[in-house]
Length: 450
Ligand code: PGA
Ligand code: ZN
Image (cartoon, rainbow, N blue to C red; front, side):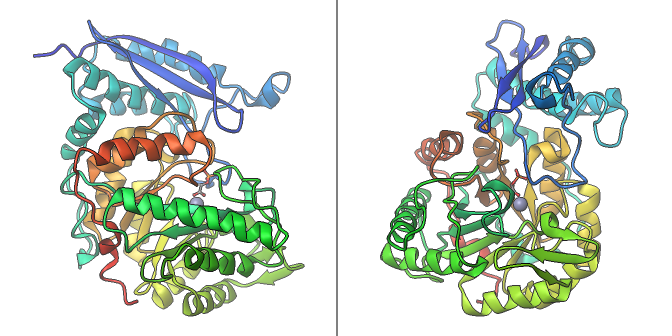
């Protein structure tokens, strides 16, 4: 039996893809190499996310330092967990949640807790001599099935059983808070639903991405500069124009829009919502009601090969979400990101009120591996498609690539195919693709009326 007793926990401040400080943690089991993880960070964050603890000292790094979170790992958390079993993920996470004692991990910091949670999984893998996928697989298999509401759908019947390679959902054009407010909507993405293997899916994406650049440049726009997640950040005449560029790029790559490659949107609408209305700025100042946003999205779904819409409505607009789901839920994947914040309680509320049919899964929104996997289980057991996602602030850490394969979650959203903090994940998937995991691809959407 390998010894998985935690011998040492160490943390340091490192920097993410936006040059902002973040937490790196190393957990070491007796006689093994350290397990290491780096915590990501969002920009268009949801109000209900667990708290990312920042120092707030205006004299240093604009208050964004994470020395307090680092110190919390080195002192309080290390004292509590050294001597515990790194292979018992549930107990470690429960112990940290109890030690923190708040609803949203605001005392010790979700960044401190998540860093330890993930580094412990890697430490256990090191001590046992198994791969991260194998370790995450084991932790996933210990997560209890979640009570299904009524008709636990056939929608997700393929997901969560065996490790598998995911269908990627990839940014072509970026706007909103990720690209300087050039467009109101945050991501215009593609989903290569017709590809029959992960490597083929990825090649198609790269081909389309290159065509987007060429088409933008030919039309006199900036087709080289990219946003936080590597999507191009042109200043276009309207939010809709971005959609036409993406469709043209799919065609220019010799692929069929709607059959080979579909479109996804992350509207990220919480960020232009206030006092009950949605304020669009790309074409002058326009104020839309929730119902008008649903009309706009339905019109786009009628005219473009859109298969997925994230945060079409704001994190507080539950009525709007129900209407959106009634109108489009059988044709389109409707992902809650800011709405659900990877939180099982919020996802339960969504399931009970039929809001959305999919959930974005971001580890640092909830702040521990165990809780993240509980939300993922809850989603699959209730017919909600999970989409494992990066943040706009990322690093070389590849945890989510191993995690999406280990859980067989089916979909992956990491940003574009430029910028190495994104490619670190895609390249890890190409390595894993050599291990011949099955690939379900666009077949996960077979229940949609298209
Ligand atoms: P964020 O963006 O990491 O800035 O929240 C990602 C997303 O909205 O999906
Ligand atoms: Zn989002």
